[in-house]
Image 1 (cartoon, helix red, strand yellow):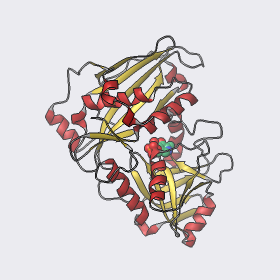
Image 2 (cartoon, rainbow, N blue to C red):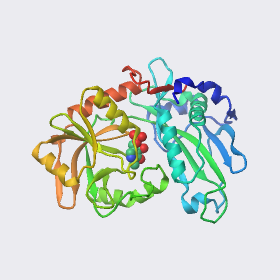
Image 3 (cartoon, protein in one colour):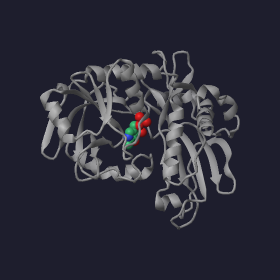
Image 4 (cartoon, rainbow, N blue to C red):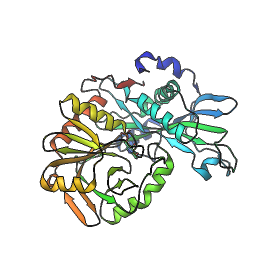
Length: 371
Ligand SMILES: Cc1ncc(COP(=O)(O)O)c(C=O)c1O
């Protein structure tokens, strides 16, 4: 469904607002927006919708941000029946607030819900929940260049029952945290550790879903990457330990010397990034050939060494596009681009951030106004 067909304000009016009795002072908020402590400091409110087998989705509300009360037997604490999303609200030059392809996040949350046996939240409810929160907390959307308000919708099994079956009650929430520029001192290439003893996802597993368990499983390999002096970890396919899949929280692209862009194809074990799909579109708009295929690690390393691959980058909501400067693993350490971000990497980054912040034309109708 096109978001332009939806009257988001009308949908958001289904949310009852219970304003916080302790909102941040103007001074405190200004301090936080000047130097955001991402993931630590949250806005004054949060959205909640409850679900039960009998009543379906009900009690749409905007409430004061604060702790949840959880029964120790809540299913999520034992069986990890939980999913989430991540997207940003951007302040445009005229003061309005927009998000980038939120209907794609709604669709991905629905796919994740199906895989984790959670109830699907409609696209209308998802979009309205963002509008309801951002309208209430719009003063928390930073104005500074490169800054935004990160939105974290999530859903968890709240039933107090120690049985392995889908929960009969579920909570959906949205919280928001201001975020600064990912590369405050200019865009710098990162080093990647390719895990060969750990995998993120296997065939038939939950790799294509955005569920908390996937990230729990990525922590030990992430520690290994830090120990090896790398900033991020990349995973290979679990079946053959051969094909590059993705990073712990980003998809990956290679640019060939002939200008072609390549990215691992979606096999059911990779998270379908919204940044990834957008880059495929923007690159083909530029007349570039784009290829989604299985990419063997050894082939990629050979192509980098021979100069057939000239740029490698990672992409995701958090950092948009991150140049990769080296790939390391057991028995290899390969540099890409001599420590400098690639030309196409940076051009795509500028175009995408320009669309998101309202300074480059939104040819594809990707932006949705939230407030
Ligand atoms: C495992 C994983 N892959 C890829 C991505 C990139 O997805 P998106 O571009 O939608 O942020 C993310 C971030 O959400 C992720 O967690």
